[in-house]
Length: 129
Image 1: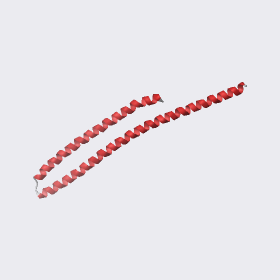
Image 2 (image 1 turned 90 degrees about the horizontal axis):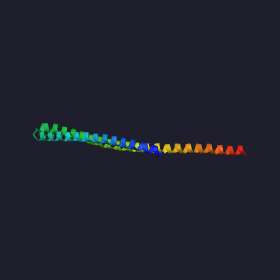
Image 3 (image 1 turned 60 degrees about the horizontal axis):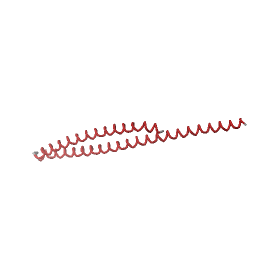
Image 4 (image 1 turned 60 degrees about the vertical axis):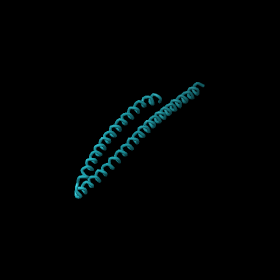
């Protein structure tokens, strides 16, 4: 049991560090994307100040589209974060379940062995008399 727990610990740490690195890469990519969108938005705002009333309506439509896109990106980031947390929890639960199953297997094996030894001793004493 303790050997299995010792063997699983580096694996858990490896999985966690791997998942954390993926999460950090995703976060970095999203931050770059948000920065680019902010630049585009700033460019659109400067262009908006130089537009005519007809073109202002188009600019408003583009800005509302960017707002929707920004909102969708933020929701996506939150969903990814929640999925990452859920994955960590599932991995942890899986390891605990495996350890518990191993303990139960060991207990059953000990009970079976103990039962066989007891039967052997009983029969030996019965036949020896």
